[in-house]
Length: 351
Image (cartoon, rainbow, N blue to C red; front, side, top):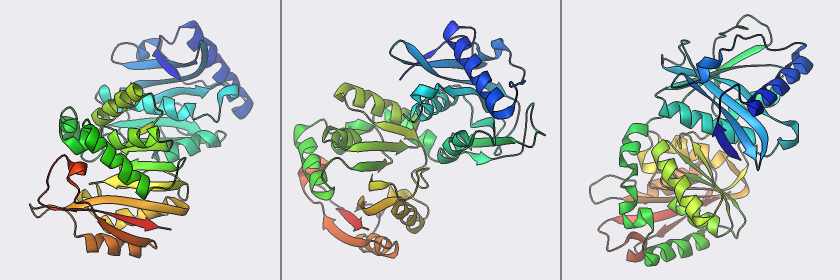
């Protein structure tokens, strides 16, 4: 879907806004009476977007700045006019538009996104809850309406600013950027041994600039990459576009990803678990995401600096999560772009 910023008065925007109003008539018995000022979506006050499938407008989404505090933040923005035409539903377009709105809002300096929907839109509620939105006190024009449901999500995640600052130079490390054909080939061969044959659904936690995610997509896997850093995800999107592969990339917390349980063939991470506040809890959460026959792939290290995780501990955590663990050391210099002075390893866990 090609998402373009347009004025709310643009003919395509006006047409789809009228369609969503007719949807409200069907579902609620009347049009949405919330006051809408077109100027609220201009400049840095907000933005209105139309999503196109070829030349056909198929979706809308917008945000405007809000004075409603939520989740302890005062810098909030409100979602408006999220809509996908009937013939284009169940293709993931609403999730794409939501992710685009969230990126736009973060770039505008907001911390929390808020929204109002209603009980007559269960598919919208499911979308927002799966994306990590939580119920909050009612606000806005329909705050006292019995069918009104309000949600919010904090968009600035733990570690975001730190990793944003490192994103532009992240690929300078050989095992991050995989620019050296020898290193890239080594990782490709390792992952082929660790993962099931493609196509498998792979969740890449803390995907960074997307090097491994792109590598897996090139080999035929269906890959979703999550990262707390919008800047890292920008690099990942550019890398996927250059490689000509499709990735779903989401701004999310790797510690507690907003992914439905029991739906993923592989949950993979590389040097993420050691940074978790509670590694045991993280492994349990990740194991719960696995479909029957699924596997965890945890690439970790015990660094010469004293940081990292003891591999025997990781084995115990995987076993405690109800999976069958296997430990394999990874001393091959080709994986790391040279000789290493610490212990690096992978623990897999099979359901």
